[in-house]
Length: 220
Image 1 (tube, rainbow, N blue to C red):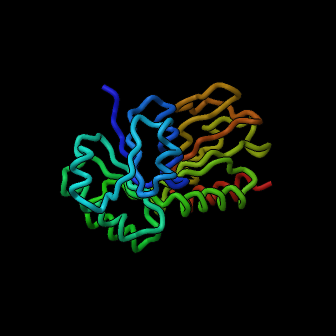
Image 2: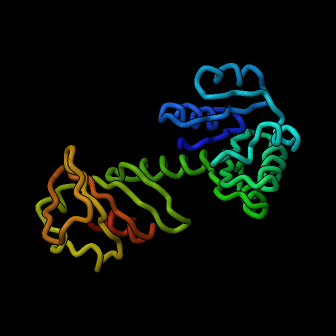
């Protein structure tokens, strides 16, 4: 059985989710109060409807509780986002992901039962800032307020050394969980694995420890 998704709010964030899910072959119901936006997605998703999701009767008529996952991607209308989330929770939707506009909005969404709350603009901003600040960081994924997974390009300071020689885990408290080498990915590399120039290290750990590793070991 294919998973069935409903996406409420067809702005840039909601629209990109609809397109990606549809490209992957998922069943997607796209919902928005704006008829033009709905028409734009009519030929992309399985179903597209004009609807006000703050109306419980409307949500019931759409059979929203039967969907595996509902994504609330409503743009600037925080009240509509909160009301919709409350209705979805009361109707027994299995999993609800909601886009938050700010930290206050996130707190309210968590209290009323949203399963996942995302901050696309904030998180993208943080990723970009990390990438701008370091010549070595290629990508950055926040796991929590204090921990991340980071892709770091190996430079001449560590190329030619094995993981056991560098002793990164003991010295910095971080773990190299994989190494990307050309088209190959070495998962859970052995301690004897020698790092080569051009390798990309996938590192997991506390932000402060990753920053310390970058500064001391990778600083050119």
